[in-house]
Length: 617
Image 1 (cartoon, rainbow, N blue to C red):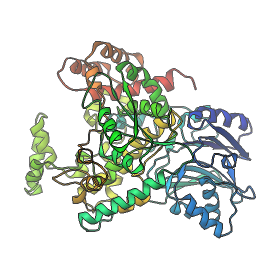
Image 2: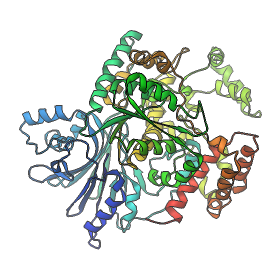
Image 3: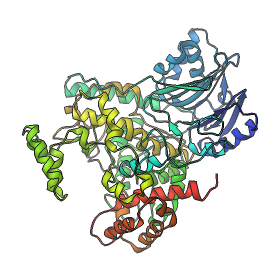
Image 4: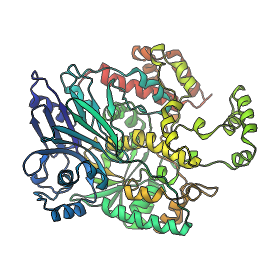
């Protein structure tokens, strides 16, 4: 885990060295071991280092080629760097370090931008080619590493980096709320647009690179998620998963510092842990809760069976609420996945014992682990009726009062493109519009946002369509972003072996019926995991990272805390606050479970206060 930041400017009115140092200091948590910067005319590059591979100063960044014509700042890990290094040495390239960073430099010299196709790993980097006077900025295949950019500056300077908060230190950056971001956020629970909550600040999409030359930006895609199924037996794909995952974990354990793993009660992290066999595992749960809100006993049991030392923390409600502003500060944008908060504590716990941690993110998306991907027995029976009949019933059901039955018939007559926008769906669009002030209603609809993804897999089966949509939006926008930001907050590096290019190439060939069927979700993955895990873990139902927020909102202490925020002058800028309090009261009185509505709004208000009111930039 490292941090990169930089800018391209024609301005002579700023002290570039001083500005880049301030920007680097803002992301110091990403790299506490050392820092460095480089100024070459209009280009300035800054770096914060967390030492993982080659702990010597030879691996410090910015890094240069032999004649200093190419310089790079790089965040991530290239897991096949040793193979690439040997190949490049045979071609005459001379290396001064044993780091994966230098492989990108010499790989670019040898292959140009096509080096991206040869990399296996996670990365966000900026490479300055002095001879061509061009800046190359690239992001990894899945979006494991974040990368932002903007020209929303007083003189059109280009800023780029690992975290938006570093841009606030640039004298010409124009900080402004993107009003279009709020309505989609209420539905998706994360910042789903390419443009972030900061107006004019964008995320570089996963699998894309940017060329900046002569003040112009040119963005191109170099990789897309492969879903090209090949019919083979269950046994064939079980063996393929075993082979590919064993190799992936072998690559992901490469490190010159201590490696551990996060461990919950689910099959994903358990499988990674069983393959890795680290010295230590780390788990968190919640005080005063057993079972669904505290699975630390399950993690401890598996660790014991595998002969691994397990470390645990139980989080109290007060600890949870106290850390929310800090969590949202590190997230850069409002993000209301409740699991971000326990993940923050988990990273804090792990940071005391290890620097590199492996986790199970990505398995649900590529192997079909979500309940949304599964069709109920009742729905499968209903879908045997002709679609035109179900469509007619759906149109009638939409006009009736919403309940479990009308919802069933409504969805039964809809195509997947109409009813699935991704794993997180909090506010219905009509509810979002109802609570928002007029200035914040003008934004793309959920259907418009995911339409591009559906168009690219229009001929695929429904499970594959949903997987693709999730991997384009939900995975980089929610799952991977919180993994990166919460781990970097505690100066550790989180690695995700399921999200390996070779694993995806293999998983993309597995037919949908072997992933999701009437027996289970992630069916073929569970079979493969069962080779190294006891039945209890391989077949454990998915529960995610549950948080007892809905219970806390029925306690007067936390109810009053949130109510004060909902009735604040800040809230009145964005929302019809009487509607927010109504949601809160309905939940507090046990009438309706409004926990996710409450949390999603509350998190936004906490975030906004931190970045636009309590200005400590």
